[in-house]
Length: 426
Image (tube, rainbow, N blue to C red; front, side, top):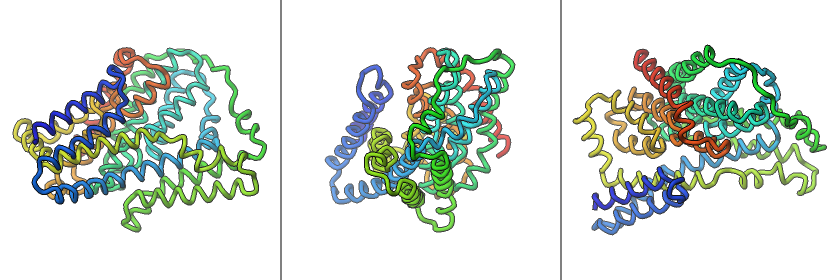
């Protein structure tokens, strides 16, 4: 049974990794892989009732992550539909390449921590399209956005799916992860930026697209203060989630659903008295239609597949093998980070959570914090290594080899510098 289970998982994983080569959507592959893994488990097991209970247990854990993502992504879409992010982007006026690179990178870094790296990368690439006319320059800036978004997401409990998984799973706490990873994450971004500050010259060509006033004033009743209200309320609710969890000890998805409800009410109040046609672009129903539902289903499929490996104790065996072969935990985690450049970091972290239990490695152990950093920032080394990278790749049509030549070395040096910083500090 275990051999067949591993075979199905590996085939599914390869299909996901080579999605663009074989032209099969990774979400469909992940769903098929997840269901087939559990099907093999229950067919070969002599206690189907027990397998059913295990599946329900794993589905409960997976659902917490999915509901959190659904709520957070809807809040972000509501802010965006009210042009809330434009209040931030309209303040960017510099044309100097180095200055603009630092501004964009720092905004991306901190915005990613408040939102998530995928959403922030999408928002910032949209900003770059308004700021930079030259395609090559814009692609380079987009590559740095990937590094900044992944670095920013690594130190925040809500900034990256993998960090959120560790937070929800009880492996890390919000306070500890911020305290432990903020400096290493900054180093992983600052090292490439400092190098580029000495090598990059000149000014950008401004894109001849005017959007700020047109988009805001074309909606006669959408005042600028409405945009500010939605920006402050939405970001405030997302930032409130860790506080809510600390106070109530309820899972994070409860906090984000509460936040969604409050943002929803505020939106309804802002557009009270308008007809349905006017309110539709700013409604929750419209926001739900714009979120990346396929990504949520992808996480469902891959996490179910990982759950089957955990239930059959394959991951425990892998952990034992790695410990006996490699031995050094820091080296193992660093290798996991490098692997996340090739393989999606979500299943890697999910597998690691199944490999190591909280009894041997309690909450806020060095293992979990270092894993959050490595899995979060290691994906920047290749453009296919993170959700933000894949999104930017699609938006700007960035070639894999172009990224490898122009960005990968910068990302690796930053990743290495941040890892060394963490190991020196802890």
